Image (cartoon, rainbow, N blue to C red; front, side):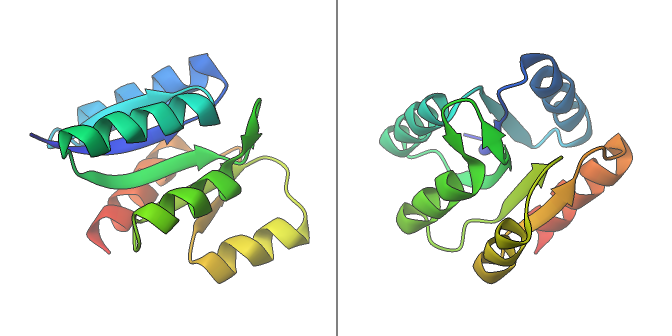
Length: 126
């Protein structure tokens, strides 16, 4: 079974564009979409139950039902060392510091799609 990239964003149009771009450029991975922290938690539970590898989590910071950085921290408590990318259009210095301390790559919106794909590839290869 192919490894998964979990993509979490509450903007459904954006998540579709990003997921399609990843699927086209990273054919060895399955892109798992989640539009909320609750959806992401359910997706992870399903992956864990099936024994499917989670290779990377990519999340927006501000989600309708939570905080992407807190979700990543929670996920890493169960999956230590899991590579993670957080992207945002708005974040204060405390978020920047917390992401850095946690070893989470922080990307700022707007971001060019080619740059975003390159960051995902780099995280997978690290």
